Image (cartoon, rainbow over all chains, first blue to last red; front, side, top):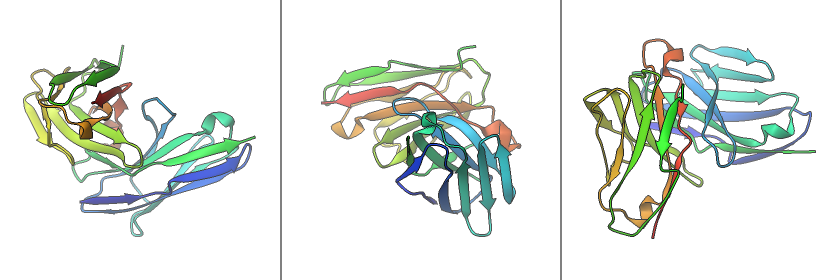
Length: 110
Length: 116
């Protein structure tokens, strides 16, 4: 089975940096995904990691350590529109089935 | 190109009633899935399909049926609704393949179901 943990909620100030951690224990692993979900909307894809290391996409970066079962999503230069939930998901060994963590709600304050 | 389309967006049912949530995608995706999202519990996989004619159970399949007669459509059926099925339901699809990029899920807008 899969067990994925991430903090429930985080608060940060506009312009600052926030790091959202995700730890996982899985019976199979074929990549880790991050999604953003604004309140009342569908999740949208942000990034994925297959190999260890840092992947950067503009203001967002995601890091993976497979040996530690650990990932983080780094949000830089926070904007008010970044207030949302961020979902960590692990892909099964087959690759197509995603198991999600409970999500981290990020509140950006002025 | 509409992506993933779910209907209805909102539905209120009485306990014991049946209904079908519709999901259609126009991206020629092989993989389709249904999740439910409850406060504090994240997205939980109900059923999934890796292609037409093939379906399988996810983490929380009880009380739900699915079928996949075409590549485009993947309806979710509640045979006898219960208050515990009050939730937001998301349909999601992906190309599916050996590269991780092929497994990025595209989600529908969601269907909010209330069972009284």
